[in-house]
Amino acid sequence: ESQTIAVAALPPARKASEVEVCGVGVVDLASAEGAAQLERAGDDASVAMRRLVGTMRASGDERVRALGLYLDAGFAGSDAARDSTLQEADCAADEACRQRHDAATVDDYAAGAQPLIDALARAASTTRDPMVYAVAVQACRRAAAPGGGLPRACQRISAEQWARLDPDNAIAWLHVATSARSRGDGAAEADALQHLASARESRLYGDRLPDIALSLLPSDASPLERLQVMAALFGTFATWSFPQYQSVTRYCSVEAVRDANRRQDCDAIASALVAHGSTLTDLDIGKLIGARAGWPDEKVDAITSELDAARAIQARILLTGDQTYGCGSVVQFRNYLGRVAQRGELGAARLAIQESGETTVDLAREYQVVLKKWMREAQARDAAAQAAVDAASAASSGS
Image (tube, rainbow, N blue to C red):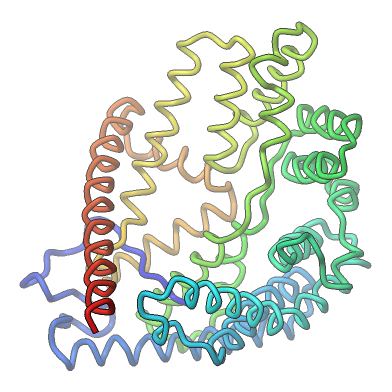
């Protein structure tokens, strides 16, 4: 599904309900005509997205084909879930009904996506390309049943093989550590974390998906379609499962780092995550482990400021809202996705901070203001949602 992504510095609308739509002009979202216009553009973007996936699956580049299969699996799962016979609207305030609906939706999604995930896993089982393998790992993680069961083809896919193909990638070794922990192999878990400490890169690979896909988007796509496809692709990356960091936080627990040798290991792990991480989560976990390993407060505080500054920069680019359709959005958002593909989320944020000319301290203060605003808005939404549930429950009881 498409999600809207807003950027800063758009021209002010003529009135609250009007927005500047790239290639169209000013559109009144409050009018039936304006709403219909954007709905048609959304439908056109969905068609363009399906065409794009078809192009990717037919590509001669195995990386592009793998990403095409991954995207198509999402479409197939969503289509199957949409056809579920149990409709949430029929549940009203019946919690048991909603739970049955949710379970049925998950099952339908998995059944629809499985043939494409199987095809991706089969392709990855013979590849020498770490990115293709990483995409299959991601797809198979999402296909895992709640009890841990995997589709048959996914049983050929392992974190250990990913690390063999990608030995300098910290993300791959995090997956190996998680795999070892799940089977109770403490020695293998510790070995994986030792490799993580010496890794010189952190490649998630999902951050490359939007940029690669957009390079193949048909040239006849309108600016608005292009923006909406970008938003949909970014949404796919935003739901990419990050590795689990429990192995790191447990290995480097407050108690464990009292041992001098373990503290030295954890210092190296934290340094690798901070210096070579590709995501804000890498930086956050690196800061946490570094603090446990005895990093000075000044160093930890500086990383905290950098994290908040990066989040402030992201908020400027990715804030959601009504003013999402201007030509400035198309250009700025596309540039951002390209940078994320080249440098990772963290690298793109660091470059934007540098280009802003602002200090990390000032940007961090800005983020704290934005965060408080989001929290107030979230509390207001939660209160409204609870009021609606209470009203529905009262109406049901009185009928």
